[in-house]
Image (cartoon, rainbow, N blue to C red; front, side, top):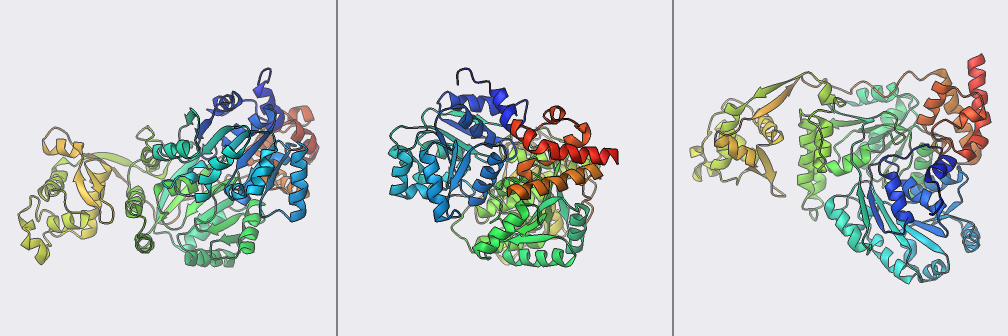
Length: 592
């Protein structure tokens, strides 16, 4: 890397004048030849962290990627920037495969994208061994860990492929979601040598989080219409609900497609292409869709049903606003969805942690605290109590001391020696005991009958508030029990108080669209030109320019190539290739 000006390469190929947080040290680590593990949030620019080093060093960079769609998105984006990259996978014809292998032998590519299964072929490994591989990158590296949410067994064969190479390349492992346990798995399974580890904050300030209660299909249609022309993903928990909501939106005249594992491969590929290429701005899908989708201009992600876990929710919601522009993440909450998820869990008994993860999601939906703090705290990140940019923070609120009421509940939990869950504690407090409860003496537990006359729903909601306040916690797997935290013990010893945040009730139905600003006619014209140019190049529109770049064009209105080249996201190649067309649109719109 001697003599290489990283910022000059960044500007020339990617059109940026500065790096995002953590990008430059990760790049320098790889360029010095050190194995590197990087955890960056979705939209944090992790692809650039290995694409730029690939341009700065001699030899080939091989990128292991889990999905054909992800490979295609990245190769399309790179070729749109005049960077020689290719992929070898099942979507490539035999003739194309042979031609690309020949070009690789001739050193005509800087990056090669592969699926991990390709490395299981002995003949292909012999082919790789003859190439000058300088760096091997494992994208979506959490797939290597059974603790990760998208475990892929073939990822565990990668290290054997490395051992088969005549010279060990530097290894880079990248992911957007990795707990400490998963990071340990990545280091071990990839046999990383004294890796440099970078863990960037999980916060995405451009994303707005909210929970919508009691939203029906009519309100969902209204929400999507308010985002007319914007790209959005609507997630459902089941194929049946995906099909139903797709038909509802289509009947309302919305350009929409759908994606789930019950569709055949060709239908799924067409749906994904229609969405990525902006032919259908809206897609309704199960969690089978989305991993590694590189589409940067998704303006909203709406979960019409509960996700399986907060890890899955943050990963899926994070597909909004990858270009740094505002994005909305709305989670719809219905009590019936809890029953749906429990049904799914009961039919997958091998996952002992599933019910606990579901309760994490339910607690998030019922929370009156800052939603961003709730999410980031789940990942162990230090966050302020109030972000000011989520649905809960924007609702009027007051802080209330509830120590006197909480003592009844805490005493009941202690009196049962933490052997009962919320249902049992609710029966004690309400004085509605079963014959079995009476036989074991639960009518003698402190707090008995103090909530007589209240409904179970009301008492369970009170218990949930104390969990959120940090004086109670759930433990156990299939049938979670209630336990006292250190804070709860201190309250019982009269050493601490219990305070909760009381907010105004959530409005029923979908929240108003916040990321659908009144786009100017110039922005619409630039977006239309982008779509035409992308079709000519057979690449997704975001591979030409993302929405953030178009928005800056609207503000700065460049009239010359020199001015156009100063727009963020415009590199040297794109300035020449696309500049005249966009400048012409700006001139025509401004002079009209």
